[in-house]
Length: 133
Image 1: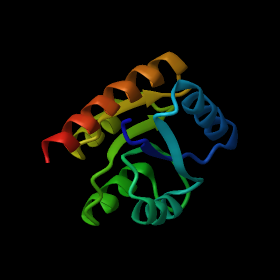
Image 2: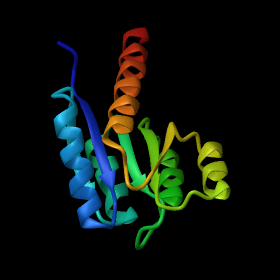
Image 3: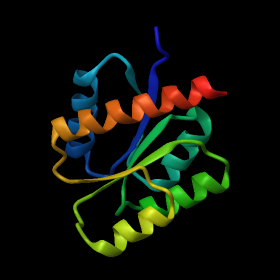
Image 4: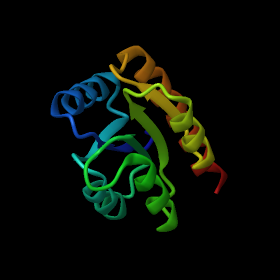
């Protein structure tokens, strides 16, 4: 059996956070939510504690925004795959996210089918990387 993929979610809107958690739990037992945070600072602490495979982060959050979170996590040698979650479909955010090596970009409201397709693709990528070591 393949190891579970740990996902951390950073989102400051409780209803959206609950919705994403519920959608992920319905996709597959292969995915486990290893933590949730309502702001970037707590998310950074959780990334360092839990070493998730995937981090889904909102861009606009209190204390530390999602792009800064990604930069800081990478400075601390996080190997997580980052997915930007935002209601802002602005090119500058996408461009900045790409320079940070973000895996993908999801717009709110998140389409559960799009989320499932994205996570299953990332799962394959993560497992193929782990077998190459």
